[in-house]
Structure formats: C-alpha cells, structure tokens
Length: 215
Image (cartoon, rainbow, N blue to C red; front, side, top):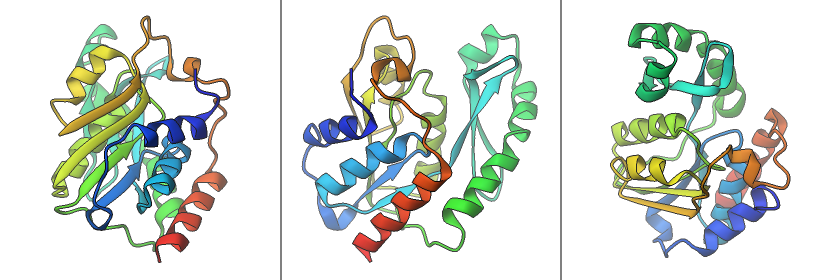
C-alpha cells in the first residue's frame, strides 16, 4: 500500500529507466494522476503536461467505466467492450452516454488549459502517468490520442493495476512499467492509505508551478 499519491510518484520515479531530458515529457491524466506525475517529473527533471480524458460511467454505476471520451476537435470515444457488454450496452448507447460527459470535459479544458500552450509531443518520448487503473478505459483513450499526435515513444508508468490490464496496455504502448499488480484487485484507492479527491485548485497549482520550472 502507498501512503498517498506523492509517495507513489516518488517510488515510481525510482523504478523508471533513464530518459533523455531534451526529448522526453511526462503527461498526466488529471485529476488523480497529476500529483503522481508531478513527483515523477520533479525527480527526473522533465516538463509536465496533461491530456484530458473523462470516464464514461455505466448507468447506476458511475465508477464502472464503460468507456472514455477525450478532448479535441471531435469527440473521441474509446469503448470498454467487456464492461459495456456485461451491462447490456451497445456502441451507440455508450456514445450517447459519452455526450453527457462533454460539458465537464470542456469545463476542465477551459479551466486547466485555457490559453496555456501545450508541450509539443510529436517525435518525443512521452511518459504517461496515472495513479492506477482498474479497467484501463481512460488510459487507453489517452494513449490513442497521443498516438494520433505523433509521439515517438510511448511509456506507461503506473503505481498499481490488475495484471490482465497491463497485457492490454502493452499492445498500445512501447513500454509499460507498473509497481504493483495485486490479486484480487479491488479498486485503485484500496491500495493507498490516503486517496483524497484531487480538486481543480490543486491541478491548477501544480501546472503553474511546473510551468514556472520549465519556462
């Protein structure tokens, strides 16, 4: 068990290989992945950015991801077919549920990014960090977006995840590093002593402080 997200980030950084600073960027999945990613970026001396992804929860079970939606010019939906199928949802139904997520995704985009310029990722090594995955739906969506943006090498770094999900992620990333693969896997938060919600103010603070370090 990790004490909190920051301890998880420090331990994760200790288990990552060396990267060329000039061509590597750490990208977090906000909100929960950002404190973990900040510790990784600080330890490795790398810039930090975010990719916005929002989970599409199952009806009546909001924590169960039937898919994920990412920001961009067009809505991009990644469907968790196993979970959606078990809930009796087809692709069109998941897409309808995804539309309900867009207002919150747009709110976060304006609040977190606004006029802030994102770091270019084309041809770069990108280390994608989250605080853990359960179904992997949001992370898979993020990886898809980053591939579309032309990253050179895609590395996934996680404190905790189910072993079977890592196999799926390895098909999408060039390298996957995960510290713990507990079985049975209950939930990401079950493997942290403190797993408080990361609020908007914390996201904005981290991004401003990290931008100041790399400006």
